[in-house]
Image (cartoon, rainbow, N blue to C red; front, side, top):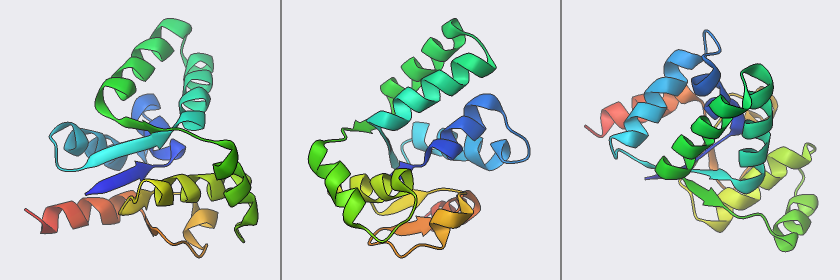
Length: 140
């Protein structure tokens, strides 16, 4: 199973943002154990590095990004992806770009807790972390 992790899920785990970190950390652990393939977008990498360095420090941000790059795949974001995102009926451009990138790699799910994105029509299934964990548990 291939999933694209929205930036909020990764930051929840890395920054231990309670109460969201518990489920986010479980998803990280389950990915490390090979229960799914996790991806994130290249622009999310920049956002994660920036936000994490502001919350902690540059050394910690580098270590966190290094961990992500070793354990997850990165989806490139192209000019065409940006154009495709603009053509979707999703108001938030960043959310539209996540959907386009997930579609490009044929991801099974986008894991997010972004309530606005969860309400959108998407060609890729949108799923909350708790539901993702339940899904993984049902496959055991």
